Image 1 (tube, rainbow, N blue to C red):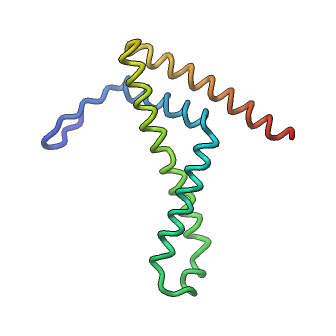
Image 2 (cartoon, rainbow, N blue to C red):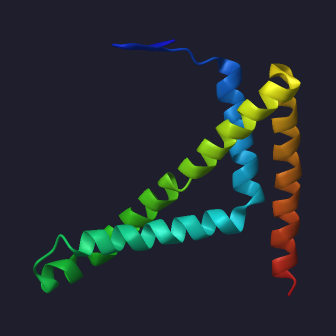
Length: 127
């Protein structure tokens, strides 16, 4: 239980685990979408940071380090949409099938999407 002054938020371990499983399954299953989100965030971070510099020399001098840092931040923030949709999937399965089924179906989704991702990458390498 988290106590934020006017609100009490009750998060169960089952809800956190289910959301994590569903998020991982979606991240693996929609790997091309996650790559696209990461790329767009990286572009936006680089564009936004460029507007902070007035000197082109200073911008070019520190460009390599900043672009690496922006790629890291884009990679971290790209999981946020999958966490939100994963929470929605977990909640939907909990409502329809019950709490224990949300974990079970989330685990099956992770396994299935992991196998799909392995096959997809193997298929790309043989071309």
